[in-house]
Image: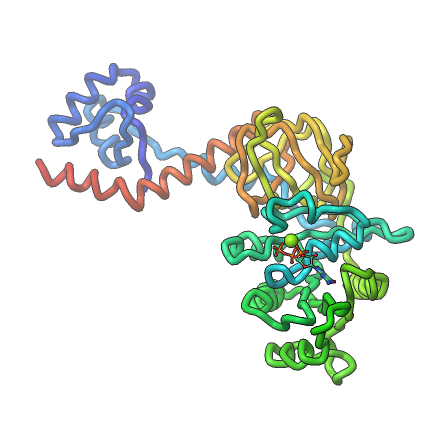
Length: 370
Ligand code: GTP
Ligand code: MG
């Protein structure tokens, strides 16, 4: 069902809105200028002026404006793997990443619980791995589910002194649903109560059988604290990534996924995206969900301003009109006008869906007063 604002209708048929309102009242439709009326009602009003109202077909144009084509094989180049670190609360996801990039992220986090998806690029010799840290708290399940969609490999962190816990199982399910290979990092093996075999035993119940137990699940015993096993874990990630032959075309307009976004007091809407195809550049006009903008600046995971970001690379984007949602798909489009148009089309679509589910009842109620 389509809806149109009384004021818009008045504008389109070039009549004062008050006149339209009077006609509406005669039809038993009690609304104000800013209310939306159904297409059928608008049509009846227009008929009285001998005007034929045509439904606008512009919503279909969105497809044309977004250029999400398949790339030719010869244009594809290898790209770094995007690895999501998953697992139960406190099993050591952030600590593990921390020891991988020799930084101190854990200490700066509020209460030591990861509040958002952090994205980091790590250089290992000539190769790059992109890591996504995900919150372990149950309330963030939905966000973590989105985390798996941009992921090539899942690292399942299981604390050797605690074993498989509810969110370990959730993480396994997310990875399986996304068809992403799982590498198990059995963490905290430095602890006195550590029992890696028990972890392997518990994992078999969820279809993950360790290689040394005759299965095909890579399990690496590690300690984020003492750094034992970290190098092996990285080797395994690169090995699995190599088998996946991950590729993307860097020489095209960008497509990416928003992994986190917030309103920054000084900088306005700030969104972190992982580029999946093409190269995102400063000055690009983009659409992300309902929001749009012209990219004012790009900031890499080290806080450094960059001019562009290619496939698999996470970047912070400044210049969006509003805060997008995590999970929104980002596209570079021809120009800012196109971006704004798509944003408006999507907002209109959303409004229509909203009215179709709620306000329609109200309109029908009004009709029944006739
Ligand atoms: P959430 O983000 O809240 O889900 O937690 P997390 O999985 O990121 O765990 P985090 O890295 O914050 O670690 C939780 C606690 O375990 C911290 O106190 C760490 O110091 C400790 N820890 C992590 N890894 C190890 C390890 O290998 N050995 C020991 N002994 N302690 C560890
Ligand atoms: Mg954490």
